[in-house]
Length: 464
Image 1 (cartoon, rainbow, N blue to C red):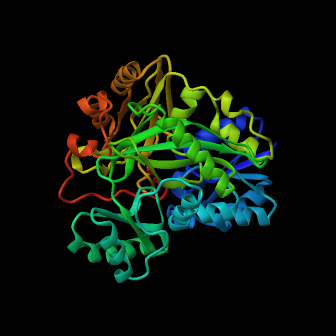
Image 2: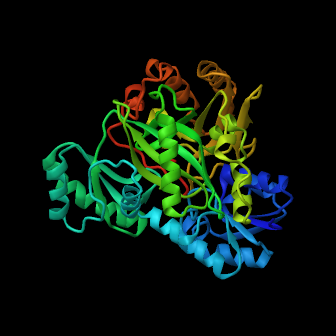
């Protein structure tokens, strides 16, 4: 096992990884920007390295700075968390070149699956169902228009290098397509440095369901059930739960089998997630693969009892999986609410500030993953995620009741600070959510979009 792990991230995921390291007897190196001097993970670290200024591109996205910090502190492994550099094959290659283990898939797998068009083509070869659309990037508006003419509207234009719910545009009218194509290409170039886009049919009234996989270097691959992530705003997930409620009999098992088949076809190693859309008629289609631990991994941990971060480290160290597929047993129901420092009444505008009060809820089967504490200054430079509130109960109704109580109990206050906890409370009480009849449009029923949306920093944001 590794002796020293550098955590190339910040916020609650850095705290989560640090705790796993401590339990496994590994030293922790925490990196931080100048804007994160009071980050909670620094209190858990054995060694701390400042790697740059507040701007993420000069700190958390700075590969030379991360690798230099690992070399300077004697780290033999780097855990990237999610967001930032977690799906950047260049970091994985740089680590390998310096004899440092990257806790994640091999660079070539990250590159192949990170390119959404290449991933679609690979999954098509593996026999996974896909939405009608292109299997390669569309270089001209004329080429893209031909695809739209063949499959019809509505369609969605997606960045080939996109992720985290960014770099996509829904087009419902054919006359709007060319403009949307050019705008999405320009946005993709700005966001990802890669202007390639592709087109696929847009599935309306769909549910977003994903499958957690674990794969080792010995040819073993399993799934750990599914998570429903349909409660979203602008493709950013807000609430996740496991198991996905109300699926037709046998559908979850078929999706799990498809995910494992796709993972084997890709040569996947480590923890990852296969994302699917489920149509109203119960059919499902592949959407993309996330090559990292996900924001919502705690709901899977709560229903399976499997420590996914621990498994990541074991696989990265060359150990075989500790589980076989028949060993995975899902029990009860778990729900996660992402509590962001945002003002829902003002179009979810970021609302950072100093926390004068921060009192997480307690009680049985309540988990809070957070980097917040009383006196903490929430920086405006990064993603607004402040805490993940996760509950478990024997069934979904009890889990919803426990989440309602826990949200009411959470105390977060400070000058200028607003959070989404009240909005989330409203969502989980919506009749469609309570009856598990919701889809990705639920939030628009709860709170219509403002006329002028407010941007949110998304340096380590993630819909997944």
